[in-house]
Length: 89
Image 1 (cartoon, rainbow, N blue to C red):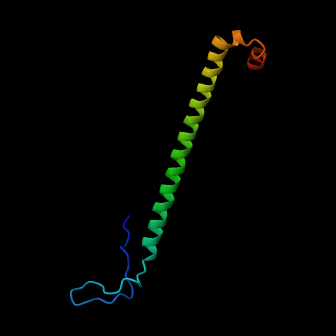
Image 2: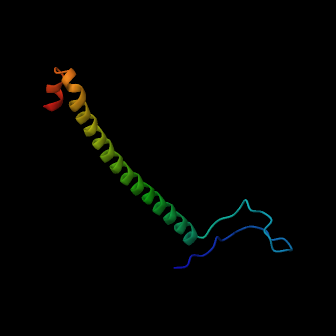
Image 3: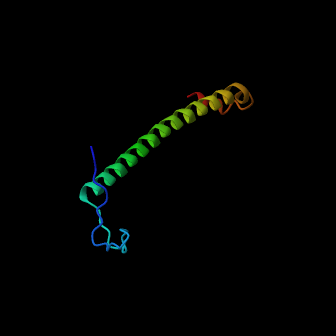
């Protein structure tokens, strides 16, 4: 698929072919649509990556919490028997 390059409208050209006034630039609709599609694709990919990383972080945090409860139960609960029913139930 090919896209047309930016269309410069209203820019005066100098003798060497360069445009003199860049403040009145506008772009072709096809080019603008392509730019919008690129931005949307980038944002969708960014959201997908954030979701994947969030799920991984939740799993890691959940596993870490279970390990901490296990360690507490194993090593500290014998010294704090009144807390043990709160953890186990």
